[in-house]
Amino acid sequence: MVPSMGLSGGMWLLWESFVKVEVLGANSWFSHCNVDLSMNGKEESFVLSCVYGNPKLAIRKMQWAVLPLLKPQNDEKWIVMGDFNEVTTQTEKRGGRPFNFVQAIPFLDMIAACELIDLGFIGNIFTWTNKQVGRRRIWERLDRTLVNASWILHFVNTKVYHHMSMTSDHKLLVIKICNESNHLPRPFRFEAMWLQDRSCTEQVQLAFEVDTVGSPSFTLCNKLKQCQKNLKWWNKNIFGLLDTKMQDAHHRLEQIQYEILSQTDPGDDLFAAEHTQIQRYNDLLVQQATH
View 1 (spheres, rainbow, N blue to C red):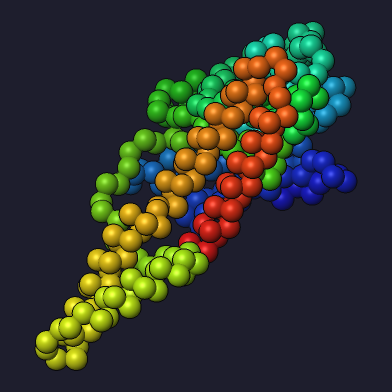
View 2: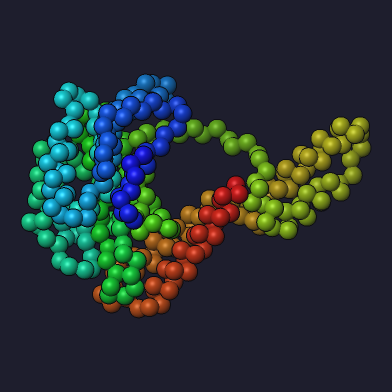
């Protein structure tokens, strides 16, 4: 953990117990680590650098002069990611002051010196907004993921997703290294969030009201099976899958924000719709917390 300075900066680096992380160096704006983990039964290792670019240009220039010193000296796979507080082209910025190419030169020079490649993204181009309304709204792509050639050659299926964040002014960068998935059927389990809907109790009662002939254990087993069957049907046709609802809310929010971006002077109704959709998504997140 790198503590914040007032209301800005600070960095948390968290990992699962099956991941081995060796911190090679860290200060107020970066964490440089060696990561070892098992992927699909194969041991993998790479170097990870998490970066926070200072809001002040003069300090960022000094940061970009330091990053090349972290470059692996051999063929190690290297990934550099974070909030760089830099925009590299006019397409990565909308609103506010015009893009300044001269200001971006030290950052671009650093990328070249480190021999890094921008992985691009899937989703909306902008990763940060000042959340203002109307013409005061500013959108920028400040967060990105950079990798070296060794990473590209080894992890050919790496993808970066820009995911919505309902509380932060930055989007989440989700990096998917491997596309393989396990297609085993998901076992049935009772979801705590179902208890928020009264009709869930009705489905359980209906299952236990079914007449069954046999021993007490046989009767209980059959009623539990009927209860499972009822709840599966109810969840699919009445309550609805939480994941589906969240995907729909996320998609609708992206549509609204696309409309805002596509208009020169978007109306207040669009910003109101954006606020309403964010609230809806937050409500779904509360349900997910009880999942």
